[in-house]
Image (cartoon, rainbow, N blue to C red; front, side, top):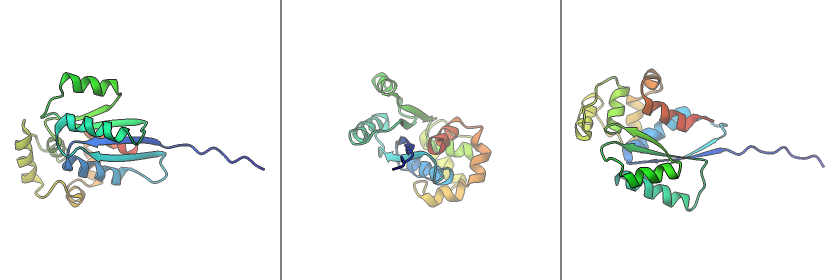
Length: 169
């Protein structure tokens, strides 16, 4: 009887995001950049706010039931990491992607607009340039099509890192 060839296993990536806007945007990127047949499995989990500690708690709870080859925390800089949180992320080898001050500032930068220094001001400014609900998939499809993302891709480290997370083999 002939031996069957060994099947290569997928690289598994867990992305834990801080809130609904990050989840919708990261899911949008996955939809655009992930291709069937990639040796990659991407899971996106939402910490539903709660800042860095909420992300760490979600990472810990998911790790109890599943094993991932890479774990990524998508954070806003509006709530700084404590020394203990930063230590835990380093110790556990969790990659971090940080939007300054928040994901809305990153979205404004993709649109080519300057971002204010605070989260609330960034949210208001984003609504001026891209009105709608940024927690909805259709919002990101409308304002952040593939062409616009490609234009901004080399200029924004946060965008580059998110695209790499959902598409790199």
